[in-house]
Each structure stands twice: as structure tokens, then as C-alpha cells.
Length: 150
Image (cartoon, rainbow, N blue to C red; front, side, top):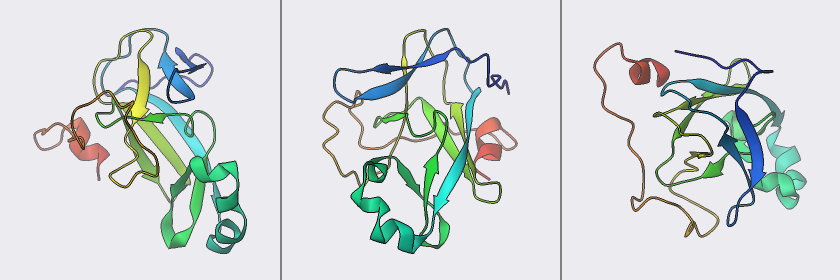
């Protein structure tokens, strides 16, 4: 599995026509490449319920354990949603980070998207997929995806 250096990433944030800002590839990226490891800033449940949910942070946080919310720093909170994503995210609660991996080969200028799940708080009419969900490829035992999901 290839990992891209923090300072030598062929990625950029740019405006999209329908989704606000998003993350885009500047060059081809092979499948299964770790493109980002974002440290997570955690909000305790009471902090989030009393304050955070009433701010712009509400649109950028991830559900974490024990009712907490996590804000992925770096590019982690900039990935837009797609019903058929080309990026997979893996939460590491112990180390308080989220890693992002390409699910397939990525073309230059392609937007890198994750799935926000089934229960969206917005109309995803701009989503490029006809599917209502995504499935990770079926792989044999010991494969990249099987190990990633552990």
C-alpha cells in the first residue's frame, strides 16, 4: 500500500459547482493509496450538544464513541459525499485519527469523495451515482480491504 507524504501530496482543495469546497487529485492515484491521515479534535457530548451543534462545525464533524463528536483536521473534513465514493475512511479511535484510502484508481482532476452514510441531512441530488449505497469490493482472505475493515 502506497502512502503519500504530508508535504508532497498531489491533492488540492477547490470549489465545486454544487457541493462547496472539495478535495481533488492533481495526478493519477493508484487504488488502495493512503491519501490522508487526519488527527481528530474530540468534543465531549455535553460540549457538542450545548454549543457545537449550533455552529458551522455541525456540518464537518464525525460521530465518535461515547456520544462525542470528532473534527478531522487537515483534509479530513473537506471530503464531500457521494453515493458511490472513491475514497474509504477508517476511524482509529485509540489514536484519535481517521485514515483515508482510495478505493480504485483515481484520475487527475477527479474529486475525492467519501460516503456520509444512509441518513443524510441534505439532498444529495448532486451525487454522481445511481446507487443508494456503496459496497466495498469482495476480496479474498488477507486482502487489502479485509485488513482495512478490521
